[in-house]
Image: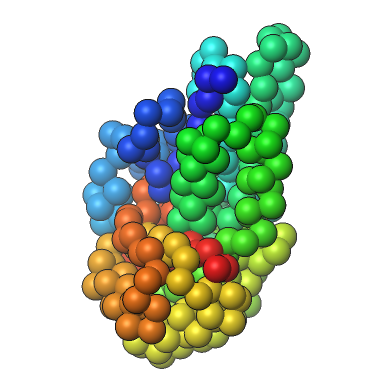
Length: 278
Ligand code: X90
């Protein structure tokens, strides 16, 4: 079987270090002055710097059906990973593309995994798909296993500002007000239905990281995978990594960066933490 993996750019996973075909479908960040396409040409730092002094309206747009179809190419067995369907139209557009594709080519197949999450939790799901493929599972088996595995992964976040989320209707204004004061971070998780669920309001980075770590353990983390993506905040990512390794030296931790879409919403200083409940 010839497989292809695809994710939207909300995964923060641009390339894959594997022999399997992989491509990302970019979301777009739109302002009155500039449009940023979240593909490999985007300079994330420059976008974040621009946004920090930009006062006008800004928003995002998900890829359309045609973008997904282009990504499918002529692949036979496709796995798509989308950012949560509860906050974005990515999943819906991918679903329509799947219908078109499969009816035009009855021998080709598309399975769409709605991550109900974003960024590093999507990375963990993609890694698992690679593992299942390498083990020689067939397509249908992998689809089923991925859906089951999704129950065993989680996402936490620590954000200094929820302004862009609130301005675009992805959290309520009340939730956004939890942050907004200098030095206050909102720590929370991706809920079971793929929305932001704030849990703690923390004063200072250290307290926020301790809260993230505490909740990860409560949700079942023991020594599995942790993928930490940061928006211009490597020191916090490293601090969290050290904190986890001190108690769970066997944990498999990789630090990465948020790309365009997640940088827009997680904002400067934000952390997203995907992990296995293992
Ligand atoms: O379709 C679009 O325009 C994209 C909208 C995406 C909105 C949400 C992105 C969130 C990214 C924030 C931290 C953690 C999120 C938890 C997700 C359930 C980053």
